[in-house]
Amino acid sequence: MSTFSNTDKGNKNADPYTQKNLQEVSLKEKVEDLVQFIEKCKFCMMTTQTATSDLLASRCMALAAKEGNGLDLLFHANTESGKTDDLANHPSINIAFYNSSGEWASVSGHASVETDRALVKKYYSPTLKAWIGDLGDGTHDGGPEDPRICVIRVKASTAQYAVSRNTVVGSFVELAKGVATGEAPKVNKLRHLSEEEIQQWKSQ
Image (cartoon, rainbow, N blue to C red; front, side):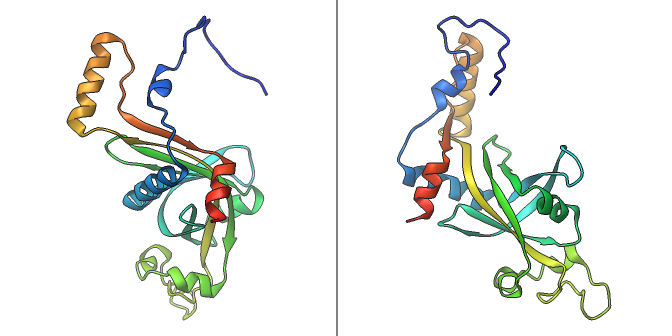
């Protein structure tokens, strides 16, 4: 694997922000904080590799449900949209959540497009009608039996996230200190979940 560096850092850590904010805690706390953040955000960007190239495309999606002890994410989608073509060719996927405070979460894994009506109905919401539309033919009406409505199931492989460890005022003070002293601010709980950790959590 090739690496990239643009400087000779000597024996100093060239990424002091990560070094200062990376936090190792119990697997339970890692997962619970991630799941809580995802639930609060609900809306995210879903990134796929396009069906016909190596380029990436992102779309805003709303979380429909969670499985796998909270780490597998489900989304409703239209089977006739480009994202389903993307996933049929390249199942790798990234889901990114973000809020106005600068907190974020990134979940990477593999996705499947599922059309089982029982699964669609289990998580169906009437608001889907507004997005799917009614074609007026008695079949494609945006209802739970509409064959266009599918579920994209994202099975998480890895995750990383940063949630605030301070109040807004506290984070501002830390940032101001950093600007004045050149020292990286300690503002976030920066955490990583490996494939092994995620599999361990799902198997409980």
